[in-house]
Image 1 (spheres, each protein chain N blue to C red):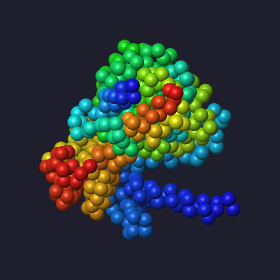
Image 2 (spheres, rainbow over the protein chains, first blue to last red):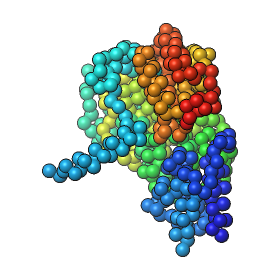
Image 3 (cartoon, helix red, strand yellow):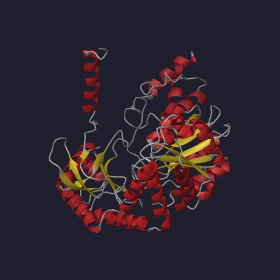
Length: 84
Length: 415
């Protein structure tokens, strides 16, 4: 179940944020997303909208920080915390 | 004293952290009027140096144009220095109304509202017209002032990939349940010089019942065959709902901005926009000079035509010299270097050659996309541009990047 969520988020991140022409950019579960510039803090909102819709959670703005969204693994931890 | 030694130490640490990240903004002093040829004191305390300015937003060369300066003097003599009031109390003169009307005519919009700056216009427009049941859908590379305005508004927001129409369409489909959807884009993106494909965007907005706002700060006065802007360039003037723009760039270069568009939306800005309600009016000399600007850009296309020629001539020159230049057809010409240190080092060497340009790198541009952004002006002569191209060639040769493409530069210097 956890891996399914990870894969779903990873797939979304690649589709939503990685440039189709950029074949050099490999993104994995622990790739920094925000601190590396793949996702900027403004467009991070798309990811939040997706997570809330797909995972049926409400992520408070104060918890949805760039740090908490920096890798797919960290995002999974955050979502699970609010699913419980 | 509340400002304790400890507080001072902590703030000093914050400043040091900015320096450590390599994003500290140095002080640079211009000791002349703004123009193609300026005198600069940099670094602070250094002797003044005469350089050619290739990094100003002085697109039409109006910052120090004699007719504009004269009009500012007349405004000062006839209507005084300041208004000492916000617009709606006692800060609106007839010349404010005249400028608004001229801007509406020029942009092809129903109505216009002046703000102290376009930053203020962008801060106020969203909160004035949208609420929690609405959605703002923004290009990911819009200007920081739009982002701030969006964050100040209670509407929901989402983003789409930069100028990616497939992605915009997908997001418009996703958000069909919202009351109003407002798509937001820059007309010309300031870091890349990209033109937003407004015709396609407007068609998508029509298809999905969305409105569109375009920030034309880097377009008004010179993009399009008569300089009306990006909407003229793409022949979709009637499809645009809102435009924000500035008098601080091509249209004079002093200050002031506006929101222009559908009359109900402008009226809501007049009633609700906090930067309109709580900040002073544009000063009379600037308003009078801006009226003259609108007359000049409406009268003929001489200045925008010269700017267009200058931009094409410079672009051809640096491309032929072997620099890696981002494709485009605006007066913003990014010379791509990819590596932040290289961009910094080259801009310093360009300054030594008498050309004032600045290196831009993360977080101002995406990581690995460092560049020197060159901005052309109608005030540049052919000789100025020849000198800038020669300097780029000399400095580019020093760093061994002439003839290299993106891959070649990254292999040599990293990202």
